[in-house]
Length: 110
Image 1 (cartoon, rainbow, N blue to C red):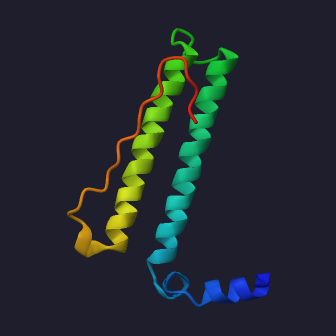
Image 2 (cartoon, rainbow, N blue to C red; image 1 turned 135 degrees about the vertical axis):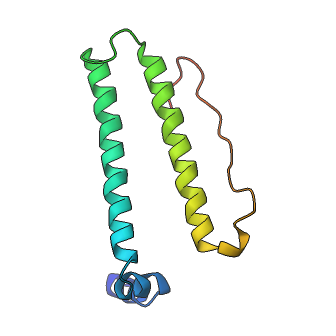
């Protein structure tokens, strides 16, 4: 399949049509995208400042990484749950959260 064929197939999907024809879908997707990029940049900035010794000097790096990693996992799980709920509103009552293991002290996130 060529790149043009892939682009044409993607343009014909229901999601693409909804994105182009809905008054609310594009702003919602764009706002979520910008918010996610901002949260990611803030997380990277916080970790960089800690590694440079300019912020959170009294907190060990391993604790900062563990806390940030836990919050990022919680946010990912929340977004994933909402996305599934929007995709299948009739199955909204099912349990969709999957617990992930918290990194042990001194270990690096995968």
